[in-house]
Length: 198
Image 1: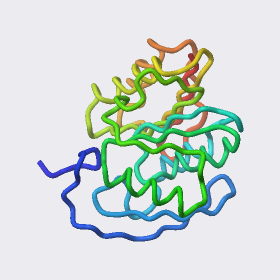
Image 2: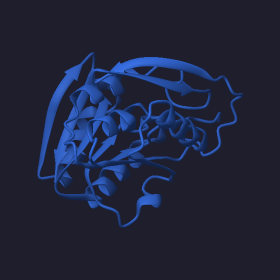
Image 3: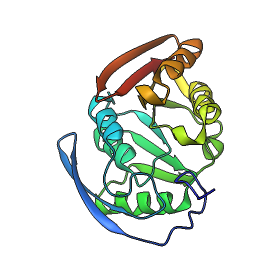
Image 4: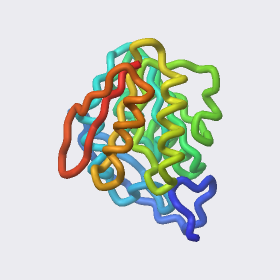
């Protein structure tokens, strides 16, 4: 089996490139590389989630599976008086996310290598964001939902993007088992954005 973007140490040869994207009205520049998710440009699902997510300026935010950083750095831009913790199992993605925070002048972030939530045990957040690694399997995705619930403050929100054909209905059912309310905030080209409130 070849390595995936959720491998800890991707073996793919480096192929660095700089991408530019306007997210929430701000122009960002991102350095990307082989061996990370959506290396050639920000994937459509992440863009839909970034444009939909509701983040207060003083929020404590966690981005699970941050990749090279588009969702977490967009959240940090919105939470100008808050703080965003960005985690990923992929050490190459973590390094890129750190570079991209600097590249975009974003300082209210902590970026950690983490197998799921292992690096943030005991920490609580107002908002958790994830574009879950569907190819890692349903049990991994459901574990992310369960652990997100444990790491959210009361009335905290989990924001998820998932494609209908990649299991949106079963994801929604799992969220409804855990959370007080689950809303489908928007849908676009088969992508569903769910907001689950604790």
